[in-house]
Image 1 (cartoon, rainbow, N blue to C red):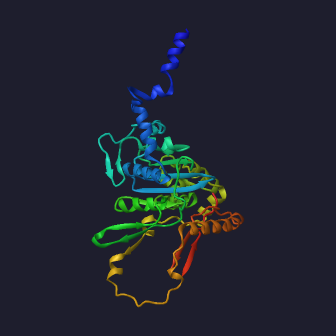
Image 2 (image 1 turned 180 degrees about the vertical axis):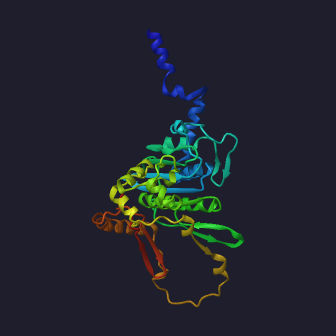
Image 3 (image 1 turned 90 degrees about the vertical axis):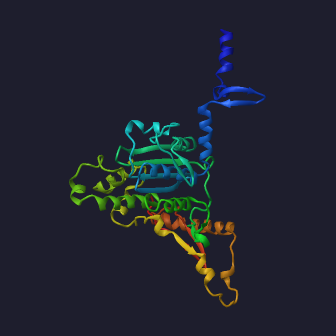
Length: 358
């Protein structure tokens, strides 16, 4: 009995189970599942990495419209992606997060971010996220996916408010100015797929408002008032079937967009503006025109020549956020909106979107 115990202790350790062959001198050949686990963990190091994987996943499911909501929940980052793609059958809602599970048996997609279609994207999300799940999906109905990450494992850029600027240079080359944050990731994806995908990005409440408007525009008022086909409708249209704020909040919860009934009421009353397509917000600067323009007469240096250090602007933005928090609490607004601080000519411009608290 003691010999059996010793044998099991020797071969059943976690290290042994991860190794296919011991090659000696400290070298081993990992088992396939362990190598894949490590590959998945490497694939996603930041929230920006995770979001591009989720957007590519929706694209490969033939989605024409993708709705990306992201918000902070304490220290965690919450991301919800809703699309009108092919959808996932109920019995596969958990299995799609397993390694090598893919619907792309005969196809892989090679794009600027690498190869997609190995069946590892959602597994990588699962390995790195605190929580990941398919909220609702069915074949032909689209999908809503929820993920929650913690900065201890999945980091993100500290500046999530700066919107990127795209600069057109000689030879048609485009460069991007701005931090590689979630907004920039979404913009780059939207431009890459501008002819085939419409991408909407915003807070939880703003994306709920966008889905509500989207559904109302595509479902008749009679069907909304008397129809009983919410579960049979596309995921992206379901909020339009809400008859009151309580039902709206319940449907939003089913989509992974948790919010209060108060926020639901404000959306139904039109107090929350839907998000435009993100590509409509992108600014292009044609450097070729600037180079061809006649030289300007030198003028006296003003404050427009000041260049603020990024860390100083970041601290200033934190101060603005703290000052705004009390006002947000009094008026039931989100206390952590995407505050934008930009230097323009001789002024600092501060923009604070007014989103209702979810």
